[in-house]
Length: 389
Ligand code: FES
Ligand SMILES: [Fe+2]
Image (cartoon, rainbow, N blue to C red):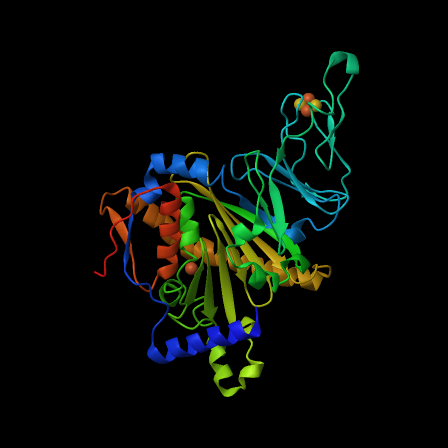
């Protein structure tokens, strides 16, 4: 992040601290309960967000070298992402052209050829069909009509996106919505993938994102865990098109008041959450990066998979480093598993009680308003009129 941006953001934090306030939207926002329980909306999301919209697959550093690959089926579509011999990212439907088995599982490296586990049809890193069993058994079947079906993919600033439906080109700048230069400065491609965990929860997939889009609850829900680290009730939110950025200042940021501006370092004194629409968060944690992706489970409105991944600044080669990052991963999962998600599960059950037709985002929760406004506008859904009370 440019130093001038850091200074501007730190000044905003100081102002908010002095005024005892935080980023405020213009109005409160009433978000209908149907957002979380309506199967017609889930159907729209399925098509427009999880089929037609590009999705972040992983960071570059999960598959940095030629021959590396990652598979993913969280959107419901089996996807294979490869890095070819020139170092470019390619993506395909992970579906064998013989009888449809998946040609790769998990992730790995050093691949030149993917051999289907069923009858050994094989494919190279470009998805091109290599061998197809006895030729007399498959007349007229050749590389031109039996290669893996390509999916649009793009890589920029250490982030890889894939659209789970064939056809079209992806424009990374359009996906970054102005966040490109700032994210580039984090050099995400130089990090190292440490671990990924999937959490299966009985709640709508958007509640995973919602729980990160305001920090007001830190003082109450997380008072025993992370509240001592962060400035209570202060978060600086800015929208970047459909995306967004939150600064969560650490309590230590106030030390900068006594230091010359030229030495101010926001990254040392805050966590930063980048929302990449529609379902991804990239979180700067001071010394490492976390990513969160959230997906509906099948067509359910009340079930989701939340994927958390930790990327360390360097590969964890020593036992000591592994212990350190294991501890970080455990803490990251424990906070959400023991504190955030139990509340989200209560909320989801409450949605079904008919207690109210909408929930209310306060003016001090502008990230939530922004996210759901963008979501409803993309899906063509009606919004409640803006109101200040
Ligand atoms: S299904 Fe892949 S080789 Fe038969
Ligand atoms: Fe939280």
